[in-house]
Length: 252
Image (cartoon, rainbow, N blue to C red; front, side):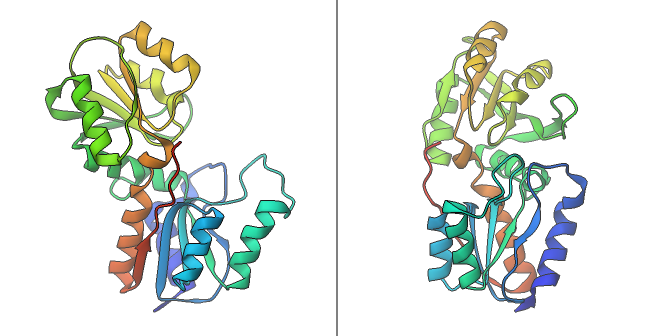
């Protein structure tokens, strides 16, 4: 058992949370009890995950997608009221890290996706003036696009949407988890054969076809399962805590 402050300070330092201009606050979003012995982690702090954490008698819920996003209605009503009421009624902490968890070189979503798929990182890159969240790396051997589809499906449990850019094999790959289709053009400039992300937009199809670069939309949720699991395990090992990851299915 450790104090809440010790755990939050450790996470903030580990993930360099203060260095990111994000769309939401990173760190402790809802304060609960001040002694922590059990953590439940998940991708998004939806009601089903909160209920699972309550049933597990967790002291802290650790997520990638928390609350209080820029531009959202700040009123505590409806779904937001029910979620916060559940957390507060059970004295449960909500700890959330968005971009800092995407970017961490070992525990982050991008790093963990590379481990799942067998990619070796070469470099990171930015899209415009944003943070360097995009990654470039290689497979050990060139792959047919159909083979990469099978690898992604086997590892992530979800068949990706594949837009064939060309008939060439794939070895040098760009990737960025979640809704990172805006990184595609910057990845093309890096000379990749393919780009893997979570989501896809209408213009993405034309970019893939006209630049001759394969695009794989592997699922926002599916590509971002692994960072929060790695962080939860790190906390459990570091502080001798109990940790359980709960996967609430999301087909997007």
